[in-house]
Length: 496
Ligand code: ADP
Image 1 (tube, rainbow, N blue to C red):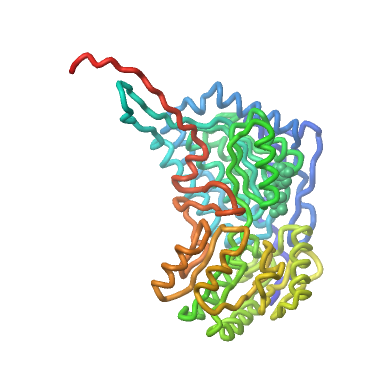
Image 2: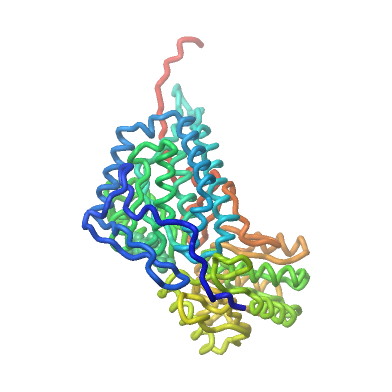
């Protein structure tokens, strides 16, 4: 289905396009700008200050000063908590503009931005506001006459590099825990989606965040991103993006000042439908697991493994479901799929579709672009996919479902794990023994049973193997932004 005629005019103005450094919106040091687009049409919607190494230097200097001289790290944790809560309230107040801006710049469904992503962002800041005044060390019973305590101190200036698929949520996952721990930040947004982070960073200052604590630089990876990752005055780097770029970031960190690095990278997550599963439910969730957000999810269930006894029924229903999927203007109600983010991703997904056809997978439906402008792709389903095909090995990051057949549990465990990735997995069964076996055997940071894409501020997220290093969200993310120090004092006992 399509709904591509007469695009809706986004109900929002673009107010902020400059870099936000030391509490002020400023042009790039070079004076340069770069265009940002509406993926529905490929048309330019704004020109944004193009930060590079010099802007990153200025932002890091501001963050350094705000960390070393205060007031942020010296505020009481409760005062910091109050600012996070006030920020969450302001985001709530401006949710309509933010959801519209997110859809305009990214192409994701407006309903999804408004009803899922903004509430998740607000919830995350409430969650980390709750942690701000509960971060503390221990008193340690060491041998000998020593009084030993541990201190959990902020790590300093955090560099954060985020991708374009969930611009606001990735902002939240990075900024929430870093600020709760008392750090200062330089955040580089993805070049495709610079707009919403600037908007929310402005709201943070209205909420009382001191200047220099949160600096946002727009710009490209090899210039601004690389400058941040290799900066000698940045104390920690957190990155979300592709595995290839994650390797570069880790290398830049190692070659400069050995700043610790957390990485949230790609995936090729299995979605396993066992013979006893409720097929209609499994079809719907497998569809959601892959097609959600135009397939642009690092944890997308991109290898749909189906037991041979239910394979034919599943395939027929999965194909029918994909054919019913409504593609169109993401601002319109009832639309289920918007455009891919940009021409590069659009071409890449179409290349993978051609590769699937050439490697003799069966193209069940889709396989081409939709419409003449913008980056819309038909919901595509391949059956008879085998493990050696590129479409079964690489992260496609688009609306392309690959269905694979399996015979028994041992086989599917082996095949599901035979990947360089290990971000997530889905398991569909009514048998508790099967569920327990699979949840223990699958080498992935997340395993969802009879559900998929369940996200919560309190639940940790991150990958095994080449899907990343470290965990974000929950209590675990705090450790990424803290130094654990110990202080030992010799004590002379005056009594016996
Ligand atoms: P994608 O291929 O999906 O665009 P990337 O991993 O290249 O994903 O991008 C994720 C983020 O990493 C973006 O903010 C991008 O600008 C940044 N980035 C890209 N290349 C580099 C690099 N060499 N150094 C640091 N950051 C980079």
